[in-house]
Image (tube, rainbow, N blue to C red; front, side, top):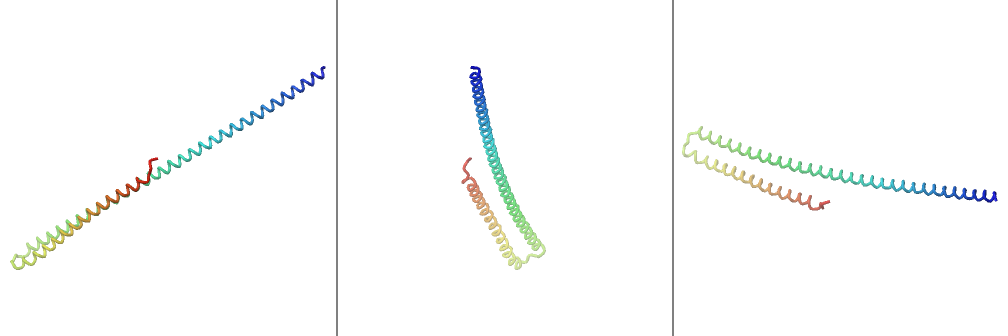
Length: 166
């Protein structure tokens, strides 16, 4: 009877030890699975952060390029305005010089009727030519301005057209 009780106690102890060992194995496996899931969540979050950072960088580069493009357009516009002003000033200076020369020629020479006649048509022809040249430059300026406006509108439409709001 004592041996039977011993055997029974020994079997119970072995059974309990097996159950405890199995519970430890189950806990270890669950801990490994939780660690893997946590690692996967961290990897996903890291991936999302990298993606968002790349998008933000691309947007920053795009905005910088747009700013540079607008600055370049503004600079070109200022250059053209300066060039046109310089042309106009040169024309005014040329006209003033011709007027001074004509005035000096009139004051320097006595005015015989025969000499005044041939000079006047030449001066009038030169003045008409200058006026035509000034008018031509003005027309070119207007044509350039309207062409630039159309081009600027087209560029604006091209930039805005394909971009869908994100």
